[in-house]
Length: 399
Image (cartoon, rainbow, N blue to C red; front, side, top):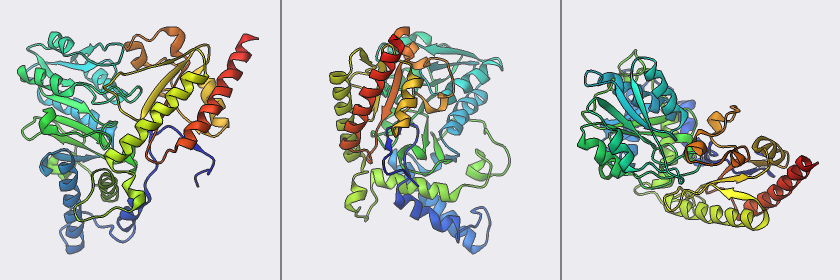
């Protein structure tokens, strides 16, 4: 049961499942339990529902249904893209390019390939966390087999110039993958306009269930399967499909993108992509203003005009981020030090280091992230708790 007094400001880590998503999933967890690969009638009904979900999700990014491969989430999708594309194309070469600020699912996949003889170039970013097309142009080589740059950063929210980067890669006949886990359902994505060859999505970042996502792979893209076994997903991803999760992911996407012939309730309409983005942008701006106006010696790790509306990264000078998060937690405020996937690490953020953030600011960084469920009152209350917590920690360290 959710604590009524809890202020949840860690939506970049995961979002609260919408009740309509749970209700959509429930029949597939209880009565509709059949395996979509079986041939009898009830199982084929499940197969039909699976393909309807695939068709809907493909439409949200302007893809073909056959180009959507269901996965267990964003990490699997990233692993499948990097390892699958690199291994399938190694007769051309063993060089790939990723940005220095990627999610660890991409970076660790790149390291895995390095241990198997591939060479990886890590693209630098500017002070706003953006990759420049010029740096990619310099890095591309005749033996490059893949470029992977995330659509939007999970720590600071920087939105990369994917269309320009993809065009450069294609000039050298190099496929382009983008991790769109933080971007999907928050900003418009059109794979045809962007030109990407592969794109990763995870449901729990947009009020869907955990443990499910998809990988878009453009028709004709050469890939090796990450998981071997049965012939599910046209042989590219073995294992019985998580139909309940896929139905839930589709229901969550329908909140963001809409559904033909479906009139959302007033509460559901708040989750429409444009409405939710405008709301979280207001919250982002309000919290940034309150922090900067009421707490001295702070630095906003700003990603400029190309930024996701729902992520705010702030560094507090002379304060330990871990100690600050502990105090916030005691007062019912949930936030993170950066990527929740790396929150157990004592290492400073690789994203902030790549952006050139000075050491004196690194250790005191906190990420706040918002959703359609976050209220202005919660932001105001959180800022007051934050001000008192920072003041307390600075007083203790001065003793």
